[in-house]
Image (tube, rainbow, N blue to C red; front, side):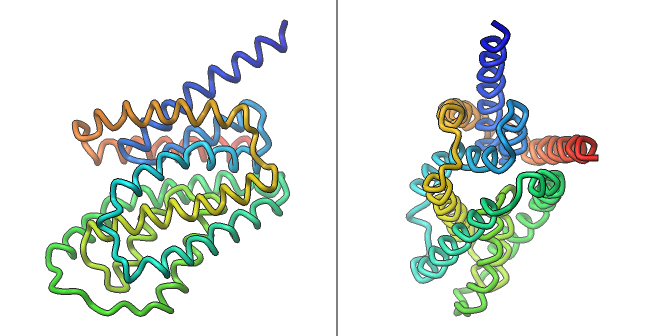
Length: 259
């Protein structure tokens, strides 16, 4: 009887967390700050929780790529795709080779760094938009240096991933991509392909807890649909602040728990 109650509680908690994560991702991002700790809370080992969370939230990224496909710069697509695959697979492989206890001690640091990255994404986005509005023609992009910079970012996405989107946009902007819609399309594509590469690696390694993954995937999708209906009505800075505070609080909890 007690075991049955625990199982039902696990599913109810995961449904709620996944729905909230989907809403957050649609409105501002940062859904992993909720769904990943929820998977840890119901007893999934840290590495499997991270892998399962990545798979559960990935379909939402695919729909974003489909919506932004026409805005992609085709000349940069090969290098972005190549680094996304190499980085995503490498990050996933290193994650799977990390000891559970080691990754658990990395979790609060990863959450804290992701929160801070998300926090500074606002000023960076404003800088990118201002830069885009003053763009005068396209500059040639140095492909090899761009690839060298993109690889560690995509590696991070395959390993953990939260908060990496603005790093991709910043790297592309620094190397000469100046139009905001092109930056956003390339960012979404790089994140989607990096995560897909990690997803495939996780699936073949057997790291996914499928009965929880499918539940999370469904309700994150529902949350994403609901969140999208209200995204334009919400103040972006307020949403970003909520996400950052949530991430920092959860990181603080894991620092306390590990201590």
